[in-house]
Image (cartoon, rainbow, N blue to C red; front, side):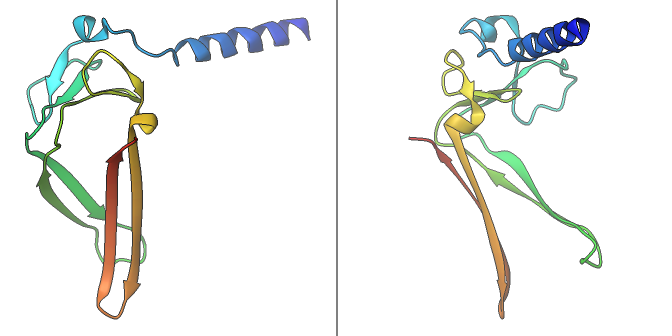
Length: 126
């Protein structure tokens, strides 16, 4: 029993260690890759989306109710810089927060006689 508790304690500690907020120096130690770059990139990297830079956003519909899977790609851009690393986000590449604390994503949709509407609203958390 004591061994099982020790193993559980070590597992919990190692799991929590990976949840530590990245330091301000992360951007100096991990490669930064600009969104849209298709060259070989290291597995561990920061994605940089500069303000006013268009990048592709792919939408898809699939499931057993559809006759076939469908997808469409549109171009989008942000009003300000955004850095993404794993589940962390930053506006300046120095101060990192959990992406859900910086970005609020609200998907919605529905059907009526005109057809279907799918909307994704993405806001900075205030």
